[in-house]
Length: 317
Ligand code: GZL
Image (cartoon, rainbow, N blue to C red; front, side):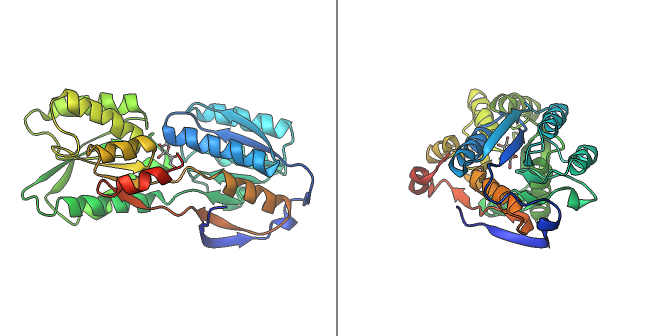
């Protein structure tokens, strides 16, 4: 199991909340939010694989970006009286009622990947997911460093992820909190592009047409798929990605490493999708009646084009 840095904000003794099923087969209902990106496909594969290895029966429902579809899947899990429900929430708001329904059914909940905004955090046992704000901070620090010798105003473009999702909100916040240190560094264009290659290409085309003779000098893409789409648009526009436009992305997929080696992406902030073993471990702890930290954060790094060739063979997604 990968080592994780557990940020213990509060721990709760779950044995009083849920009966312990020491060695019985565990049935997990998992509501996955979609299949929009390579990161997401790796996340799903990791969870399916880890369930198999753990001997946990996984009922997987893919909501394809629809929160309503997530609610329906969760209600079907309640009907089936699964032992534990895992949710990767497409957006962070609107979860109070469904989580209350699950609580009334006496089923423990693990939030995975993205977070939920609820007043009553007893509605879920733990949240296993990245520190997206920290990812934004890392991206901002790289931007400041990379452009430190570039005089004059720095025009920045931003491709945001799914509107209302924790990674998009927090990556954007962290990035802005850092670049505000340099008053001539400005985000001149920012649009959602849904974490997809198509979205990244389409929005980058719009950016370049709008910008005309003053294209952005730096692009912050909230994930690799949008960066890869943007690269296609930048090349079709006749500019050199990674040179005319510095590109910073998030996730760390194999394609992004290949783009770094080709010099088309300058830096990638890692966001680890391999959360399956953490999720299955959490399910076992819960069903064994043991205590879990409220927040579990997988370890993450930053990779730059100078070193991408040393790292690419170690990548698992
Ligand atoms: C982050 C995850 C994001 C990835 C995207 O944990 O929710 O969604 O950064 C994915 O690639 O689509």
